[in-house]
Amino acid sequence: MNYKIRCFDCGTVVDDPFLDSCPSCGGVLTIETDLDAVASLRPRDLRSRPLGVWRYAPFLPVDETRAVSLLEGGTPLYDCRDLASKAGVRSLYVKHEGANPTGSFKDRGMTVGVSRAVELGCKTVGCASTGNTSASLAAYAAKAGLGCVVLLPSGKVAAGKLAQAMFYGAKVVTIDGNFDDALRVVRQLSRDGTLYLLNSINPFRPEGQKTVAFEIIDQLNFEVPDRIILPVGNAGNIGAVHKALVEWKTLGWIDRMPKITGIQAAGAAPLVRAFREGREDFVPEPNPETVATAIRIGNPVSGRKALRALYDTGGIATDVTDEEILSAQRLLGRTEGVGVEPASAASIAGLLKLVNEGEIDRDEKVVCICTGNVLKDPDTVIRNCEPLLNAEATAESVRKVIGA
Ligand SMILES: *Cc1c(COP(=O)(O)O)cnc(C)c1O
Ligand SMILES: [Zn+2]
Image (tube, rainbow, N blue to C red; front, top):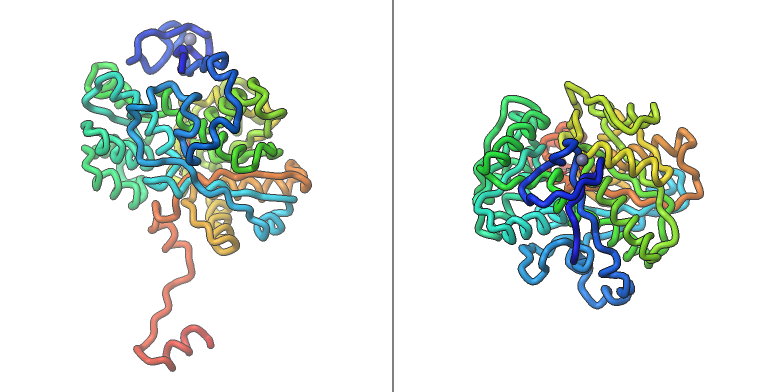
């Protein structure tokens, strides 16, 4: 694919592949896809390939023949009829990104990002992470034979994610600070050449993440949903979903845009505040706090992309409390048998709230993207479920404790 790296804010074309922001204005970078190069393609041309990130290779800015892949993407899109009726909407689909190789959507961006690192001849890759980015990067670095350094906020990473980063052999460094602090430090390490940065500030990451939107449209046989809801932390993903839909709309593959709807945790909601005031920019939250650690981010690097996605598609942003998040997580599990981590359940919690407030029409066809697997954060699950039952080793005793 032909492409340019451009500043999202001022449009400057950037040639240096190691820059993590615009040299003129400091803005976030984006890939300008050359849509003329794919204009002769038709959706059916892609369909002979397995569902997954690389089905959409013509839309990705790396050489597919040298891709570092763990067969990411191709995740289930569940038609959740019972949950739809509980939520009060006509139809509800859940895109279960927890079914990716390392259990979160981060794998979609990482297959492209690590392929890019290999193309550039990098030896060591790194990231700051609330957990899932580090788990994913560690696995793809292992596959590619690269060194890997991950910076995590000390004491705030869910057990499953921490275990994965350690397991795949990354150098795991915990930082006395939050995610925003860790990102500031890893950007310095990237600028002095210690590592190649693979946070979503790297514009190749969102390119892979675009494919979640491509798959949703594909799985719905090109019947565009009214709305796509997703949790928002650093805001790479919501911008990627928007970019994907703009590309297919420009090509005429879809005839309208779903309303993109972003959900933040109440303790980490700088973009929701900006949206409510109709602003293009946001004021960072200095002390982000939420049980949904994957979105415990106060200064989202791609925040401006997120706001653009919301305004451009007539979407909404809202925030949900930790209580609403945990209750939505259980509801999804116990109604549909789909297990997601707390941050992912923010999309379901947001749906319930927005339907109640009359912001989402009951006649809508809605897709919620659930970003990560329930196994990522077992401690939160165990803390918030009914306590264990204990019995003597007799049928009678078991009957008694289960109330049979
Ligand atoms: C990374 C992540 C998010 C947030 O995505 P952003 O692109 O940072 O907005 C949400 N949920 C899960 C499970 C994640 O891993
Ligand atoms: Zn710029």
